Image (cartoon, rainbow, N blue to C red):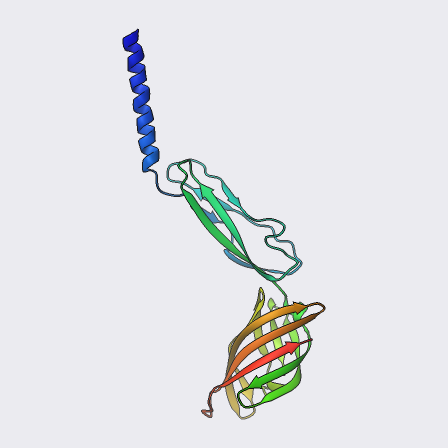
Length: 220
């Protein structure tokens, strides 16, 4: 009987050692797969539903994923860029993380208004009015009408994301010349008003005039 008990004990010890060695050798963290886009934009005051994430591990059959998504992350009532953090840990305490960026953004319709503008360069300052209109095909894009005191004959389009506004490179007509315009800036809500602070450049593509750097502040 003692011999049998010793044999069972030896087997248990051996199995424990094998299990310990297997766990000890497991240094690979799980792999997290975020469901949907890792960089998404939603309109302010709309409900965000997080699609979540899954995880796979080379040793464990199932691994849970937890996140800090909550009714305050993101805060749908306040514009900004919010990061949702996902974590997954296997039985050997190997940890993996992944993130999703959620941009709570004003839409073009929310920005549509008439603005007072102070537009300054190294050579002059122009005070004028400008209007924003929405792009009905893209909710996060606006048209700036009358930039540089109606110097350009067309509208300047700009993209909105979180608290930023970007003017992608685009050609515009200014009388007898064509200009390449580009820029970016910030959006600040000062209830019930909005202020945009934009740095942009104007390059004359036909006459060789030096690049004009301008700083425009839009306010309503």
